[in-house]
Length: 403
Image (cartoon, rainbow, N blue to C red; front, top):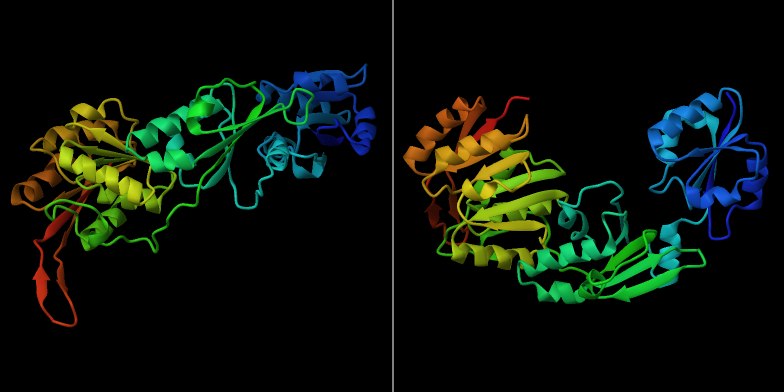
């Protein structure tokens, strides 16, 4: 097999080594903006659609050397990964250039060894908050749908929903357009200012905010979580419930009857990439959830006011479900939630009253779930006074939906 040269195009175009190698290639794959770099007489292959491009390049490699032109460093959120998988490392030589990320950080004079990186190329924006909000500094590769204004507007809406003006005000937003080109433009502003602007399609977004207050280690105590009238899942039961849920790193989690939001808050801290929906109908508890989201920097928890299952219809389909309260509609909730739960997904119900403990397993079994039950009886005491406090036993009922 001949050789494939993967060349990064930097602000000055191709370097001397890349130009020399390009001269010996009969076939060149490149985006339209790089075609002026290709000498005449070469076969030019469009990069998009990528699958067709890779297929044709593999055929050409049987008889000739091939070049691929890509922006910046093609191994950094670029075509490099797909290309290496398609043709094999042994057949590829890589000549990288400065990446758009390096150019962005240099232009905005920001160190980048403490930054997170997110690519939104071809991704839906349904769950932007879990991707962005855990980070104090994040660089985002945008596309024609996930634009800087849309991203900032989504952040604004999420933070406004929990009345968190402090976090909104802490954000400094930077947008670099056409980096390294004659049309290069740098824009800075607040979330609201960037949300109100339009940008060239070739852009990169940098979000920076004041360092978050951290709570560690994981495992919050009851006194740290704002709640009302002692209505909160006890620490030991909360830990067992989260263990039974076996939360994935990413996906969707419904916390139905969220109360103070203690399960939602712990889940979001354990799995920052998880989209968490806290469903609650009581105004007092909704205020508690808002306060806890702000306190623990869990802004990617989305509050869903109202009564389940009615207010579940527009939510993304869940991978995990916790039911801490049902408002007397447990069977309806289980039936509807089971119909939306992903194959292999897990549903956990905490039961305190006898009716819930006795009826829940059969409700789950009727939906085809495999069911197990653990009963947790917690007794607490302070060593100094030896006074024991006993809490009512709680049945942690888990149902696993067939794969």
